[in-house]
Length: 167
Image (cartoon, rainbow, N blue to C red; front, side, top):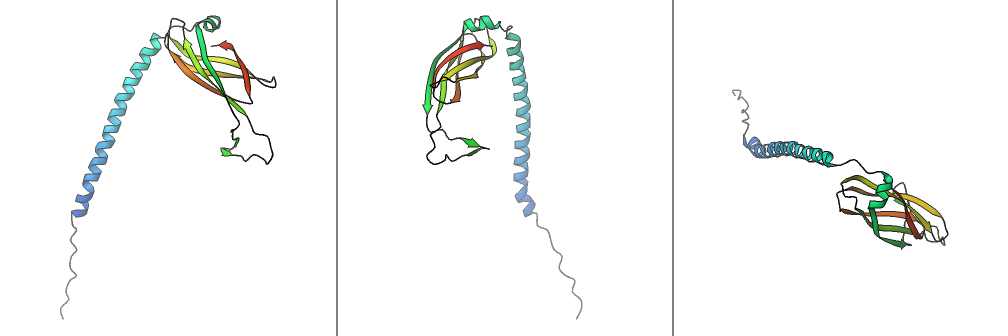
């Protein structure tokens, strides 16, 4: 019997033809992403540069205290506070008193007649036992007449607050 050579295997182009549209779509989407990212970054730099040049020097703290208004402050106490330890909720020991927390929410407005950079105010709070706590609230960048909301949480039942300083 004569030796019959094994049949040659022919590669079919069907696999490459099936993958080719996916590769082209991926390459096109990636290119469009980088193209639009570059143009968005350029627009953001242009806007940021114009914002920074339009900001006037910040007023001194005494002037800020007179023209930055903090209003509409509400206090929300909750006995449903769940303490956390390393990002995981801790279980309260049996028969232990509930942890009480208070969240202050309100508005901060720029009445200074000029645009302001980062506006912050320091609050002093007192709880029902007379303990004192201090913390900062932030309004961010505020244009003339613009207001922003703030929220700050304290442990304990806060009964009063006052604004110490604005910067």
